[in-house]
Length: 187
Image (cartoon, rainbow, N blue to C red; front, side, top):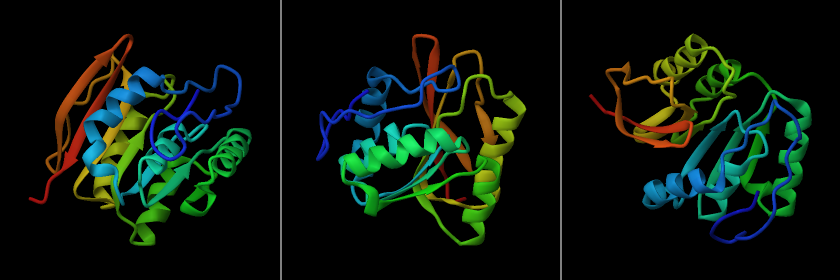
């Protein structure tokens, strides 16, 4: 796994081995970043279910201002920290080692808002749990107006509607997975 573009282009990322980790492929990552390229520069980003940090580090490499990574697995977070050091982005990042549901509440209590939120949960997570987390992101108001939520999921799971304030603007099927792009509306 490598950084595709930007200041850290070509740098390798390390990740925890095993079935609990399912990093987004470079092919899918390229598609995602081609779509959101105009929104990355100086963006504040939240990377949920961060794993190795591949998505957030790619964003930093392409000019994002700051990334908060959320990963509950302590060993995966150790790899993430090392990846941030190796890519020289440690100062532009913060790692929260905790459950995603808890992190959303903590970030809301700190009045933090994000321009882009990556949500790349394990495929074995229950649909109702992920839907609750996506709904809570909107309820807790941590996605900025016109912000983008990018949800990577198995193609069998589909949420065309999460909230009246969160509009599905694009969904792309790549192999056995899909990437859905939602925009937070001001209404």
